[in-house]
Amino acid sequence: MTQHLIQTRRILLTGGAGFIGSHTYVALVRAGYSVAILDNFANARRDVPDRLAQIVNAPTTVYDCDIRSEKDVSQVFDSERFDAVVHFAALKSVPEGQADPLGYYETNCGGLFNIASAMKATGVEKMVFSSSAAIYGEPAEMPIREDSRPSPQSVYAQTKLVGEEFLTSLSAADQDLQVGILRYFNPVGAHPSGLIGEDPSQPPTNLVPVIARVALGLIPSLTVYGGDYPTADGTGVRDYIHVQDLAHGHVLSLDALFAGRGNHCVNLGTGTGYSVLDVVKAYERASGQHIPYEITNRRPGDPAVSCAATDLARKLLGFEAQLGLDDMCAGNWQFIKEA
Ligand code: NAD
Ligand code: WQD
Image 1 (cartoon, rainbow, N blue to C red):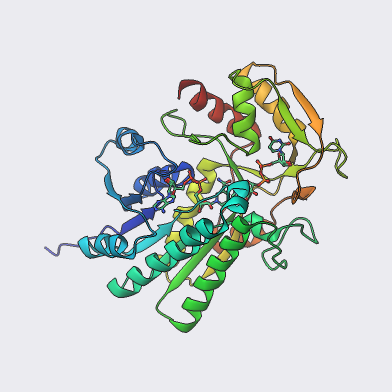
Image 2 (cartoon, rainbow, N blue to C red):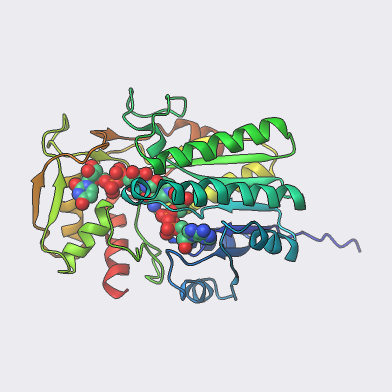
């Protein structure tokens, strides 16, 4: 009798203990991939791997490694053979990046260089890269198509665009390298187990984590940045996407690379926009808490509206978000009130 051995693909998730990385870990394991995590826990709790083990009912492999160290990164790639990398590890705070631009370039661009070098040295030919809607800046058209002209408004956004261009250029020169670039819009939500979620170790600047702190009574009210935008209620509109949908997008991206469908660069969003006040109301429904707010000046660099064109991700990956704003707020609240 002929034995058909199906080789399980081994994936390295850099930043796999973080918010989006941890949810993607679960989605990839559930999809049949074998996954190892590389993280230095700069912005993740040390118990995330144990929580992941609990969710998938199997032990977690973790490399405690800083991507800024070429030597340490090489050691990880020398210790076992990977079939692909999903590269989440990065610093992601817009204000922090303005205060420490060199630090942001060192991690987000230098770290990416170290990962790409180690991939080349060990024959790993596929990468999925975390990019951001932040690269679009103040978009000329809405919804934002992938071929819109990038216009990053911050050091953080610029590091993501540099990363994209670096990988696109590498893969144009080296036909063996295939890259999936995913431009996330505004991720929110948590795993239904309540065991993992968005758990910033620094005081948050993103909307939903700030609202969560108001709901918990840690801060007295939400400051709404701008009530005079040309939107229905005057507050900024964003394309919030559930982290579980985002995680599934990574499975589809890897599947496409392994199926030999070539490079892709797509938005991951829902295509639907919600204002700051829509999110406040949704969070009140989810938490049962009143969220006081006060409207102040606009935050520099914030566009009025940011919504994804979703047709390319649907066409190239079959990606379609399933969950809505109420699911996102309910997931965040369930996680945060027990964290
Ligand atoms: P996160 O901070 O929760 O996860 C990033 C992970 O990388 C953390 O676990 C952190 O400890 C790790 N890390 C940071 N520096 C490292 C280093 N030098 N070496 C090794 N590990 C390091 O952030 P996230 O929200 O999960 O974001 C993941 C990726 O998605 C990032 O690349 C981010 O830029 C991108 N992204 C995030 C958003 C968002 O709003 N959350 C939107 C668009 C794109
Ligand atoms: C959303 C809306 C604010 C906080 C950022 C990054 C982007 C990506 C996602 C990583 C806006 C308003 C916010 C507050 C508020 N991350 N707001 N009061 O700015 O769309 O995108 O996170 O890649 O790169 O730039 O998200 O959650 O900060 O803001 O009124 O205390 O909420 O003005 O309209 P943003 P956000």
